[in-house]
Length: 125
Image (cartoon, rainbow, N blue to C red; front, side):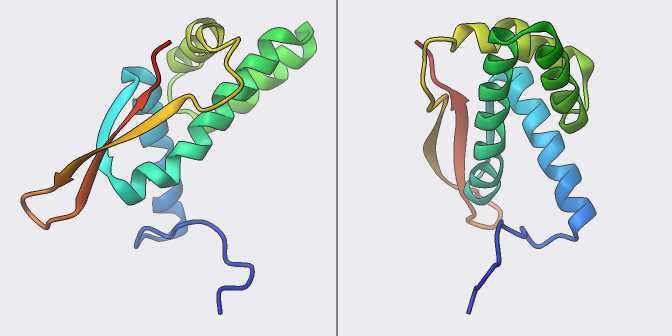
C-alpha cells in the first residue's frame, strides 16, 4: 500500500533528487523549454508552476511580501539571474492567466533506452 507516500523518487537518493529538481527547474526557467523524460518533467512541472504563481503574488503584493517571495524562489533556484527573470519577465507575462503555465509535448522514445521523452515548455499567450 502507498499510504502517505508522496512524490517520485526517480531512482535517486534524496540529495541527488533535490539537486536534479533544482537544476531542471533552473534550466527550464532559463530556456523556457526543456527536453527530458516524462517522469522528470512530471516531477518538476508542479514546482515550476508554483514558483510562477508565487512570483505573480509577490509582484502584486506589498514590498515585504515581494522580498519574501524572492528569497523563497532564490532558495530553490541555483542562479540569481533566473530569479530576476522569473519575477520581472515571466510573472508579468502570466499576470492575467489563472494557472496552467506549462505544457507537455510527447516526442517519442529515446534511442538508447526507449525512455519516453517529452518537451516541457511555457505556454505562449
